[in-house]
Image 1 (cartoon, chains in turn green, blue):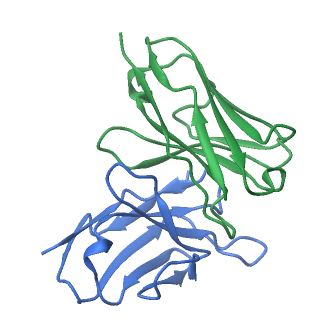
Image 2 (cartoon, chains in turn blue, orange; image 1 turned 90 degrees about the horizontal axis):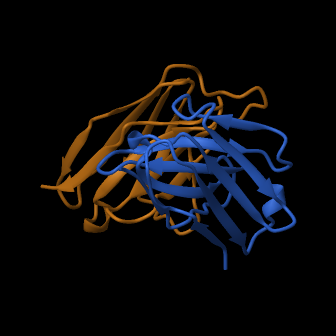
Length: 117
Length: 112
């Protein structure tokens, strides 16, 4: 069974940092690009970041560029989102997902990040 | 970044009747390898998105054949041939041809 399990969310003050993790199982993790997608309360889906299978190419939404860093550890079937300089408008449920361009639709259940003083 | 524009924002539908959602991109989504990376997702409140269609028209496993995707270049459509109660929720298109990927704003489908 395919599983993506996010962790690391929580309540953080503005300007603080959090590191999200997404642990994958049930598929060949190292063969696929992976994504982070977020959804602010009552809002639509927003692409945050992606990383290629080898971890050598990354992409970021303009809204997080320079503050967030995506990485992966293929030996542990896990990828990460380091979030620095957090702002109130980063408050959202963060989903991890497999690259949706190809066969196989895999999403995590999401982890809530709340940025508030 | 590529802008994805969905219409309508809200779509009241009658059970058993067809429904159609449009998605337009600000750039052609045809990739140099000949693929077009346009996906459609369905999301119910409190749930993760579920992909219905990828590469414009390929249905995901388990997706009823009531759902179909079509289009090319910058204009794409998701059609539901006969709406069922389980189809309510928000539908999103997403392009993965030009990175960063981008989503449409969503179309809320509800039963009349």
